Length: 415
Ligand SMILES: C[S@@+](CC[C@H](N)C(=O)[O-])C[C@H]1O[C@@H](n2cnc3c(N)ncnc32)[C@H](O)[C@@H]1O
Figure 1 (cartoon, helix red, strand yellow):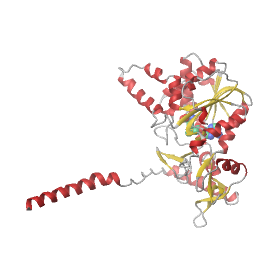
Figure 2: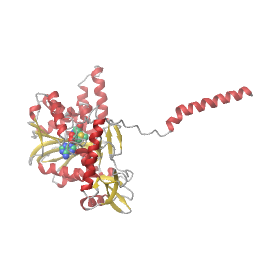
Figure 3: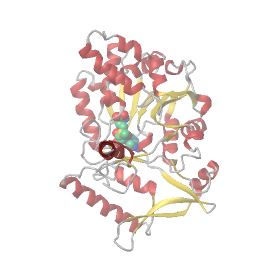
């Protein structure tokens, strides 16, 4: 009896030990990871940007829209996230994009670009070229296919990134850098292939909500208590109100609504005499974007490879993004006379363009070369990574033939 009791106690002890060491930690909610502290010099730039935004709020009568805040946080000259000198993209930055992950992305996209070049479009315009990785690798891939464009123009808002792009292209593709030019504005008339990878998500967005039946817009005021930024809602008006009303949002629903992205696409369309516009980004068609269950929107911030949803910390030191409403983008182009040439997932687009063939140019037996490439391809294609969340939308004018990238699995009907 006593032996039995001792055995039972031992069993219980073991159970408690195992529970507290293994099971409990698995069940307890894990705290959000602590974000690394910025260096003192970065903190000083951030504090200066905060003071600048505070002055803008005061000069604007005490309130600015979230879209204006995002514009200042990302693009205020010399201080904003994309304008100041920090490394943004890549391993030592805050986030990675497909061209940063692997040249396979550019090499595969090059096949779609080659088809358009052979169809008579001899210029490429890249919008928002980041580190210059896509430009360099696309030019190298096109050179290898003997299908170089006459010119490769880059429209880039950030002076700092322009310099990084020039350095990257000069280093990676020195013989091709003289084909590259940087534009301050788009030419009035273009006959070109326009490419924008992860640019629309970085365009400052409005945030709206339905509250007590009315449509309101998120903005910022300065707290009476300590002068810091404070969320504040106002009745939406004008174009924003009309666009939000058309979404028929349920009570309590809050979401982004990107009027500037629509205007951006319209300005490209206005310049495009003949050509194709290829937008690659994370996002959804409107029915999915404004799904009743996505009631808190899609806003995300990236700081040192941590993703979180507070746009009011690390001001100017973190990226702020929102997913793209591809129906609105298509509609903006359609309103300017462009046609949808195709819409599909990134995975489907890359497979249609022949990423598997490109991968098979490297022999699997050559494990040292093949294994990293296969891993990179998996990141681009896997539905759990970029393959499904990222989409490719092509709009065009004067392009009659179907495009390679949308040969199978076109989802234009979902827009
Ligand atoms: C998220 S990064 C993507 C960079 C690059 N395309 C890539 O995939 O790695 C966004 C880029 O768009 C640029 N950008 C944002 N707004 C822009 C605008 N209005 N005109 C031109 N470039 C812009 C940024 O400066 C940056 O280069």
